[in-house]
Image 1 (cartoon, rainbow, N blue to C red):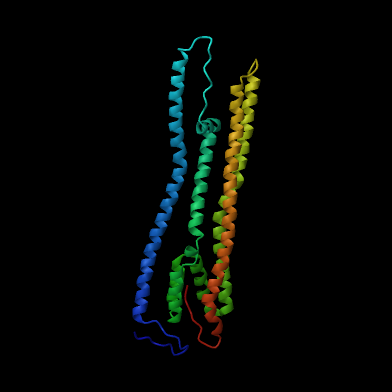
Image 2 (image 1 turned 90 degrees about the vertical axis):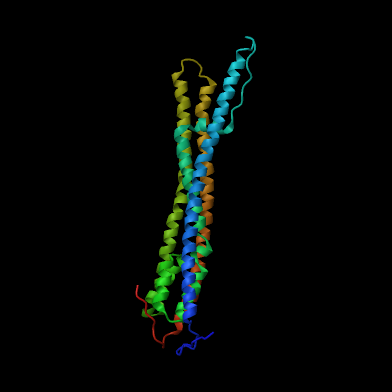
Length: 305
């Protein structure tokens, strides 16, 4: 295979066949990236709808089975002697939760759970080393730099859309002003990308803060229901009526705390993962752009944004 050499630096330049192969690999990588993105969104939507649909279907089935069982019990009670009382029937836990929460709190907690699962799936898909530091893009970027194709390197990095791609695009666009300005541009781009990701992760923390507040609201509402029952009753209130308000107070608090614990734990995990990936992106960007720190006496490359 014939390899041309660069007269200025002595490094081998990439031939036409190698560059055409790299461009074809780039097209294939873009297609694979789009397919992975589509599959990621599909998985996120399916996961979220499963969170919403499965409890509803299970609750509907359990409620139907409970109503049938109650009808059978009422039919059997007619055959019992007058002096015998029917035994207390237990209630399914999921049906009990839905009855205690009511339609309002059930809908609110289902929406919060759907949003939390969607944010968790998106966070795991975005905070991957392969998504933030794509190896194929780095290889093609270095190949363009070896061939002194500054404009092609800039277009490749800016169109990649990854964290590292945006950082490299900012650096190569300012390298004509000097290596120091290029490093400052890369750090500014890294700060913007990090802020964008932290903004998305902040919604997980928001759910972790709101969920116990909604549970506390349900606690107050359940106690209000119980005291309203006491105030409206001229005699001693029935324990079953008081238990309805108390169960609302306890179950809303329980569900709110469970959601908040999951959200806070996931938010802390994503926060630490983002910090480690920020350091990895900075190291990789400085490694790629370090070649320009030794070009003080050579021609400065230019790339138009």
